Structure formats: C-alpha cells, structure tokens
Length: 500
Image 1 (tube, rainbow, N blue to C red):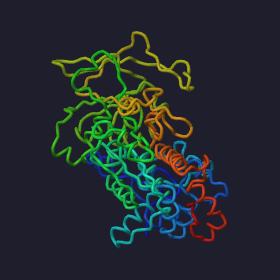
Image 2: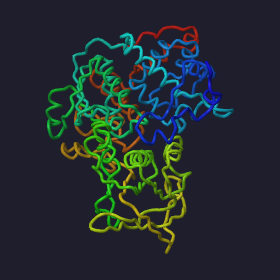
Image 3: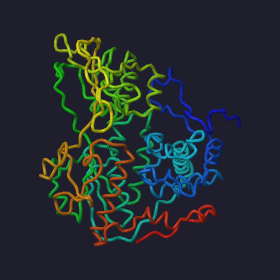
Image 4: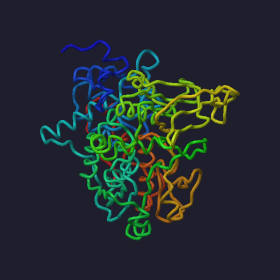
C-alpha cells in the first residue's frame, strides 16, 4: 500500500480539495488508512505519566488506545476509550486537540510533531461503527450497575446532558432526558456544520446511549410544555444542562436593519432539520446575497463564513477587531477557511450599519489598534481616531459570543449569577433542592468536550446525593485507571472490575 509521506507523523492531516469542497457540505478532514493509523499510534512513547490524558477533559485513555491500535487491536482500543467517552466520533472531530488539549500536551510536540490523537480516535470510532453496520457486531457497552430504583431527569440533550445521562445510567439510575428540539445533540447537532461533523456520526452515538437504557424525549421544552415542578415531583433529582443560547445584545447604530442576522441562529436554521432540507425548502431563507460580512473571530464566525460561502457562492469576509494571532478560533479551521476563499479584515470593528429601503447595504468600520492589556492579559482593541472606512455588503452575520440559556432559570426562579447563568455550588447544586446544573448554562459558551466534562462531574455529584455517599466518591473513570495499571495495559490485560 502506497502511503503519502506527509500523512504520518506530520500535520496537517489530509483534506479534500478546497475548490471542490466549498461547493458542498461533505467532510473536509480525511481519515487515516489502517496502515497509517497503526504507524501513527506506534509513534506514541506510552509515557509512564501520560500528560495527554490529564489534558483531556473527559480523560480519554490515549495511551491505552495507542498501545492497542499500534498492534492492530481496534476492538481493545475501542473498549479502552469508550470507557470514558460516550461521544467518541464527535469529540475526535470537534476537539481542537492542538489548543490546550491532548495533542498540545503530547511530549513529542517539543521534539517534532505530536501524535495525531484526534485522527486515531476517529479511526477507532469509525471502525466500531462500521463493524456494527456491516456485520451487526456491535461492541459491548460499558458496564451498568444494578438498578437503584432512583429516577433522574436531565434537561437538555446537548453534549453535557448526554454525557451526564450516560454516567447516571451506568450507575443504575433510570434517566430521562428532555430536549426542546426534535433531534438530540444540542450545539453538536445544529451549531457544527456537516463538513466538520457529519450528523450520522452524532446520531449513531446518541443511539448507543439510548441503547444503554437512557430515554430521550424530544420536542418538549421544560418551562413551557412541561413544568420544572412536575419533574422535581416525579424524580429523585433533576440536572439542568440547557447550554448557552442567549445572543449578545448590541446597540450599534443600524443594528436593526434587515439583512443583519445572529450567526448562531443562522447556523441553527440551516442545520437543525438537516442542511439538505434547508437548501431544498428554504433556499432564500436568509437572503444573504453575494457580499456577506461576518463579525467575530471564533470558531462560530468561521462556521458562519464557510456555511455562507457554500450557500451563496459569493464573497464572504470575516471582520475581527484584533489581529489574526489573537483569534480564538481553531488554527486548522482558520487554514481551511482561507483555502476555501474566505477573506479576512483584521483590526476593524463596526461603527454603524447603513441601509437602503430598510436593508443593510454597507458597514462603516472603525480602524482599530491594540492598547494596554485588559484583565485577562489580552491587549484591548481601541478605535484609531478619525480613521473609518466603509465595506459594501448584502448581509451581515454576527458571531460575537453566546450567553447562558436563561429561559428556565427565569421561569422557575432559580438563583442566577453572571449573565443569567445558573448559580451552583461546588457540588453542582442550584438554589432549588434536588436540582443540579452543569455545562454552558452555568459558565457560558465553551467546548463540546468541556461541556461533557462538566455534565459528568455534575452527574457524579447527583449519584453521590442519591445514594448518600461521601463527597468525591471514586468515579467509574477514576476506578478505570486504578484497575488498569500501566504494566497490566502493556500485557493486554482486560478492563478491571468497576464499582457498584
């Protein structure tokens, strides 16, 4: 088998042709072959103290995965990493591994190139799915403890809620998830374009969670279709994981002109019922035109721009008030956007929007400069006096951040903190007895994998609350690493016993 020389041990990963891919929503990242994935995993040093695992919010067993993959035992690799991650194929694709996560912590990063952990994880997840689809040989689920008789309601079927529900089910509790949309997945479903996360990957892993006994009820908005009080009365505990959905309100002159859209709502409209349905039934839903401006510098701004480019086949420009080096976006996604023809205008910020007949037609921009550092250490952008310029446009997409989904806490009178987030203590408890909260609704917008970590930690606290256990009782994940010692792993030992 001929292997391209830059496919193993080097970045970036293989990608589809940008001139072709910008005309469709097919996946950009190309997977390793079996030979490539085994050779890449074999580069792993199997560190005695694997900092890559510590850097992973869900404690993925990177070392164990690589050890098994390197010898071609994909079944064992799947068992090891599925133990701590119920959304393997999702996080393999969505995690910015090189930005403070596993690949950034890989010791090989300092002497060459880090292990392609995300690509290896993706291969293992896709291998398992193929086994199930082609041979009806589904790999076994993680162990589930005996039935406790306890009932838990989880509000929100995003990554945080799904991770929490899966862990609670593993502890033997009856779990019902309530989701207001018609499809589970939250931001992973409607906020991440298909070219980055094919939706069949997400739906498969949701079905695996349901197959463990988690019930998911869709099309039910708690606080509207069913009251929180009904859930507290019918369950032993409730966990709120409704995510971040409130848009940031701006008062820029002209902001109410037609053609100026919230970028997050734009993505939701395009992807919530499937992009194919959107294109078929709503080709002009947003009337974007051929000159689209996207305001923002994060991953969502890139997703808005690349989605708009595919829908309009026009000119799309991202405007960001800081420099390219200051962008919080994934650098790999930034590179992909550039390859596809997205343009960038840095050190600029809207001063006002101008329109004709109620429709935005241009944006007056302030030229910006970076001043003194703010409280986070970043240099604050500030306008350069008397240095404005205009940009013609047919539409504007605003992607400047989301705040916690405030609907339920306002409706139910739950105590809130900054930006209407649900206030919780160190045990993830809210101001209401028996009600817990986790994820973006408590912190604001974050990564999929970090929302999962928060949901899982909250689920652990719920379990301890239900079973009257001491605080910080050893979790499944801690026990996994306790029972699977390094030496035993190298011997190919099986997963050890798990706690009741």
